[in-house]
Amino acid sequence: MKPLRELHELGGDPAYERFPASEELFRVLEHAQTWAGKLKQPEDSLVNVVGEVAVLRATLWQFLREQADAGQLEAIEDGRAVGVPWGHSAEARTNKRRSYGPLR
Image 1: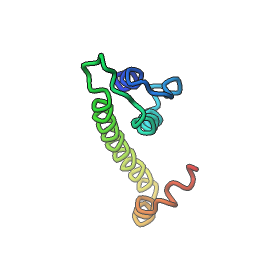
Image 2 (image 1 turned 120 degrees about the vertical axis):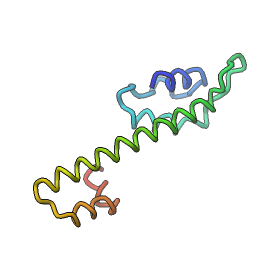
Image 3 (image 1 turned 90 degrees about the vertical axis):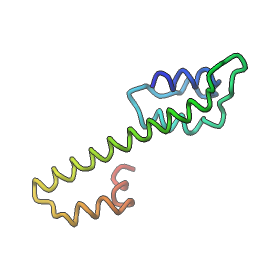
């Protein structure tokens, strides 16, 4: 997260002081995505700030997707180990409203 944070600072992120802690990956990605259009390319920088931020965001979203897939599989296996029917697990994976409802 440190390179993403540094690029947002270098790019003049207008909400940089609200940049989430590095341990909060999802919140970091939300912040980076929200403020991506406000970043500026400093004239004295050899680094393409906006481009590097985009690449880092894509890389971190992929990492998060891989972690989510592994976490979801583990949750399904835990449920099956205690007798949750396969159809019930499949329903949770395909019904977004039901899956996300308890989290709101």
